[in-house]
Length: 221
Image (tube, rainbow, N blue to C red; front, side):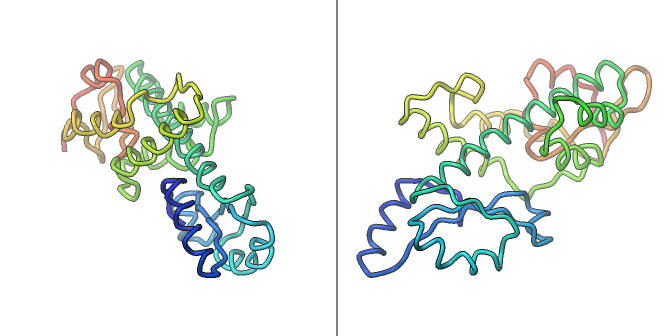
């Protein structure tokens, strides 16, 4: 159920099928909080006959199940959604920082974003955590870099341009190292002469473009 290399999955399936084992991949999504509350979404790949037989088992751990086709397609689906999620998180963080720098209340801005065409599941789930400074570490920068590496490798394999995605798989990890310690949660930033709550999260708060990050208000405990 982990997000892994699609070719590794194919090799494992070949060996297991040789031993008479039915193989399904079921990548999970929806966020950690939804998982804790039993609202897991699964992307499933494998033979349709195997999926039909074992669907009741999957329904015991997930409330939404999408059959994506043959083995490998569920992993590809998960990598696509993760890559898009990371771009959404980066855009949300940069937008909130821009608003704070311009003197806009971050809570009001987040509410406006959600009411606009820019609203998203990412903003709905991550936005409040950014504003309350909870600095969620349940999905680390290392996992982001891993998934981006796998996703960009697939894009190269299928010769698909990725103009919005970072061109280098290690962009996130290098940015995290470069900015480590320069951004802290649980603070309020001075913006427009008033106190504004500073957007901060393990992923989102560390992905600011360096010029913008350097011009951001100083944060202290």
